[in-house]
Length: 208
Image (cartoon, rainbow, N blue to C red; front, top):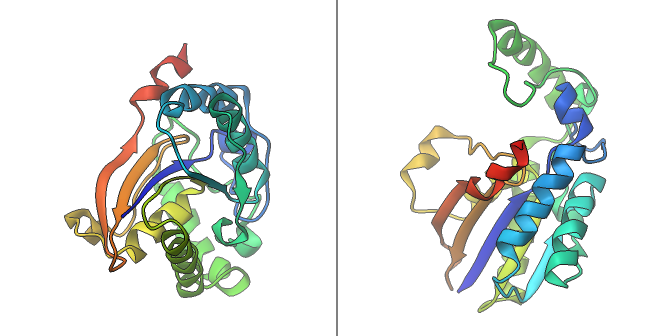
């Protein structure tokens, strides 16, 4: 079985401004660098056989900080890149960390979503891309512990395509905090089993 530990990239400057990334990028903020360091300390004794990251700067930077503590170098997989939000990328449509969503926030996304679908990556294509990446990881590491640093969208697609026996699938979306950790086991038949979802206890010191 393949044991996958999935880590979302740390907080970026754009996330603190409430802006959408997608294929666009932003460097980690000071808080994000602290989150990545705390995540590295949390994972450093887990003895991973493989370490993969999205090609996005925010993921590569998170993986670099984690890898330095673990004495591992990540391998970039293009299939782990975030979904393309099209014309919505770079726009102030997100909710900043700690802020409560408002009706205006939901209305903005309701109007933005059709334009995003027309100018960005079609969601079924995205989920097939993510499924192919994790199928390849499983085939190449059938008995290994694998660390993956990527994005919230990839996290959601991964859990939907891993055929998880988990009742939370009906909710449709799996929220993942910056540097949140999710762990799944993928069996020989490709079916996944959820071990942990969105663990953030290791980040308690990042608010200090």
